Image 1 (cartoon, helix red, strand yellow):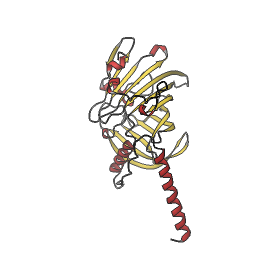
Image 2 (cartoon, helix red, strand yellow):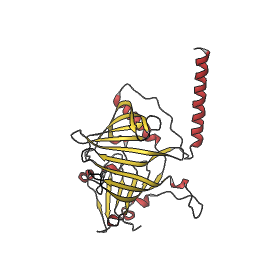
Image 3 (tube, one colour):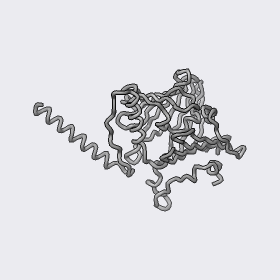
Image 4 (cartoon, one colour):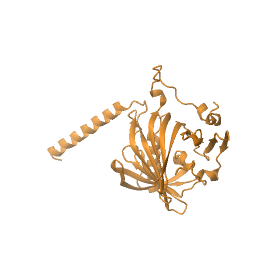
Length: 297
């Protein structure tokens, strides 16, 4: 190696070291970034599962979240209706819990869905309709139905637990996103459970930030059904990436649902109550029961 190349290499290593130190200082979450493992690239199935496991581990430790969002439903002609929602999520080692509640318009105000995820069993979903004041459990066959007319199904309300899919590495690629070209790992995920509307998903994971940039959903006939794009990313607490905009496009029906967050908190204890100046309390299991769904708690 000549002196010039050696000097350039040292400069690059120093810059990388400084960059890594600055990123570590920016991390205010209290959750360190997991060490990158040695991946086995000799087998596409093994490599795909390892990438999925690491991406899941990378996004572990955020505890809970709160988001108020504007939801726009576009029909095939481009006409739209507006809705407003609030979503709470509680991170759990045995499967997250979440509630989505409609705030507007008046005709669906109070309609809410509760999801309990399970790593080795069917996820539980409940729907509350204020008009009847009753909670209805969503059966397995109905999980593929549209959630309140959106392009999301009840199945889509759950996060994708890695163990519930068979994984395969497809390629290192670049995709066109709102912010430009994005380097990704493209992974195929085939559901291992029966109550699903999909034959497979293709998930594009950012090669540096380990966030899901895009998901392609294929129907049971293996035709492209929907495409979900995450964009307008925020780096919460210098550690966890969250999209402020989520767009689900139905490629067959030519409809879209776009969700744009106007207020988003991650790990509520890291924010102070404006009135008292004290840290906010984290969410608890008691806020993710069927009673809580109805507002009786």
